[in-house]
Length: 430
Ligand SMILES: *Cc1c(COP(=O)(O)O)cnc(C)c1O
Image (cartoon, rainbow, N blue to C red; front, side, top):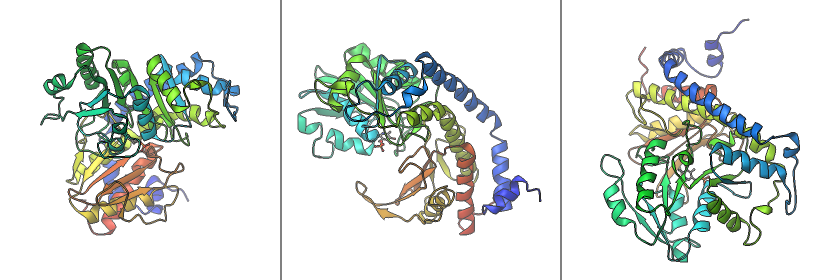
């Protein structure tokens, strides 16, 4: 029997009503998707050129062990990253355990006792609070005598240049700028906006180090923050630049001095970047990076599809369906815990791994309420793979991101709607 697309979706538990609505929504996004394809194509060539320019070859995939001296794969990988981000140097290692670690490394390597760090974009990502010592924490920057100031965004979510200018002093050594909204409700900043902020800071004092937390932002735009003046860009390899294949890791791309400091901090004074065995992960780092523009493009389309669908059904989406995108995170506000739970169940049931598992709200360390998480990933915790999570409190917002392919992201969203429908929580207009 010849099956058509609708039959395949039926086999996966998608009703005709959900199928028809989703096909219609997808149809309306054609031009939007073409613009994303354009960015993907440019970024694909950018990544490919960097690999060719540095003569990537099969020998670079060979594993090293022990001290890892003369690991040409590792050296080439770091050169390729530096080329892509247009920086003088890069540190890209499996010894960096996650994004938080990469950020802690970039900060602690470049700040000294008596220095001051400023965030001009309001509260940083949750885990940054403990690195900085906003929440008292063992080993925080605060314990080492590094002070911190935070400038809130103005009511219209623009930068408070006036307060920032007043806050900057002789002690100000570094500014930290988080590109993505993360799990906050503020908008994600465009690379252009970040460039304007950096220009303003550099005009006050060009020696201030401007660091950008680039998590979830890589390859979303044609430029990266390092193209508009950032001294350091920092991120996680189990998000965008790992392309879903990197099994661990983080990166810091930036000026020679900033990255060198990070080498010495990661390993030891005197050792620096000369040690650090790659243990056979190089091939996945390269191949994931090669695929990353495609994967990010698919995740972006998924986010736009989700916003378009749920906005049509009457729910508030951040960013809104028609808004421009600067990261891959999509927030949908349900104002109803049952809907949040059903949404996450749908995402879980759509996963290639652990699709039979029921996600339930649970108390999590670092949160002051129960949190529900849906993820069925090949790489544990990788949020470039299809995933969703939500703190169970007003306004009952679910954060959705990733998908290694657009088709899978789309199916996850369809499954979320199917779950809402089957629980009688949503009425789908016919
Ligand atoms: C994910 C993320 C981090 C932390 O990364 P982990 O790998 O989860 O430690 C930091 N900042 C932002 C904006 C992020 O999205």
